[in-house]
Image 1 (tube, helix red, strand yellow):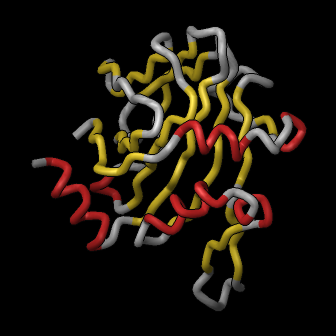
Image 2: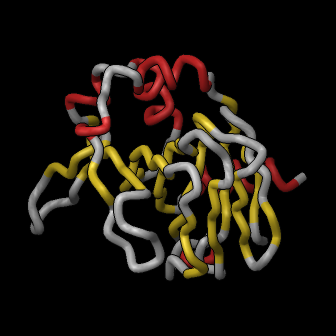
Length: 179
């Protein structure tokens, strides 16, 4: 399976309002050989707590505690969430074809996307298939496969990215969404 729309919908207007309290200086440039520097920005909303000898938990940081709707999304996922961050892809930016090894349902770890701000000129290709995501929807894409992203619009493409470990709850969500 290349992609699957999950049965969650979130309020993109409320999310944009919560994110408006942060400035570009609150984000960091993602260094990735698939992306031109200074075009993909990120802000983390969870932090690991624990030691190498204990089970590390990921908990809301101070920024997430200031965002009630975003925090409710974090609490929606009844599985281990290891990444909960915002990605902002500048207008005209392109993420070259690449693979995120191990990020597929069959590998036990999934990467979910919730578009907060997008446009009809954003292209997300997974194995050359365009996945059209609307604001507020929640999508799984098998990023273990070859994929790329282009923002051909004139506004940033902003997505909430959630990396989850697959458990029985998440398998049930996928099964229900596949029908």
